[in-house]
Amino acid sequence: MDRNFNEYAQEIIKYIAETFPNLYFRGNDDLKIIKRWYYLAIPETFIMKCVTEMEGDSPKTLRELGKKIENLFKIQKKKEREKINKLYKSPLSAAERLQYLYDILQGILLSLPVDNVLILEKLKDISELDDDLIEEALEGFEDDFFAFFIKYLPEKEEILKEAAAKLERYRFYWDEKIYKITYKALVKKMLREQYEIPEFTIVVID
Image (cartoon, rainbow, N blue to C red; front, side):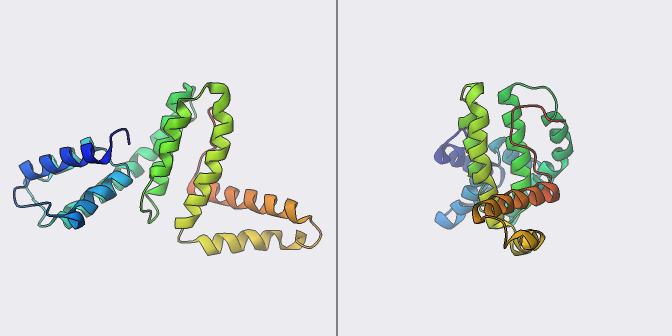
């Protein structure tokens, strides 16, 4: 997020209070709702739009409002996915490709029971590098992303067991280092195929 949490929270709380006078932010428990929006990188403009559209049908509690907005955001990201995937494969500047990569990965993470998507903020730091340094930085980020992704994956054990089963016949005569590298690459390949995770690159790949 480009804004710090306090700025983000103040603007949203003010808007919600003006729109729904019956809803009050009374303490840390209520602030957790806004922190969750922040950690999921839901833009304040999206939240305000949703709040405005709910004006005629006010939620009864802040918890209800929090869930509604989160669900609406996930639905929007899912709808945008196909369009963004196509754009990501078209000729773009490095900054544009990294922004689309951010959007794609955010949508993918939101399909899991994640607590936050702030790992994606690293892409904004990478976008500020010179083009000849970006690819190397993306390689490191890719490892971090997949480690984070599989941590929250409900089917984690099934995926890992399936990958191990596919390599079982090679386990006893491959060098341990080669086995581990191959195993890691296979897990990534399986996750890419199942969740449509793109290549992490600024180079256009058909």
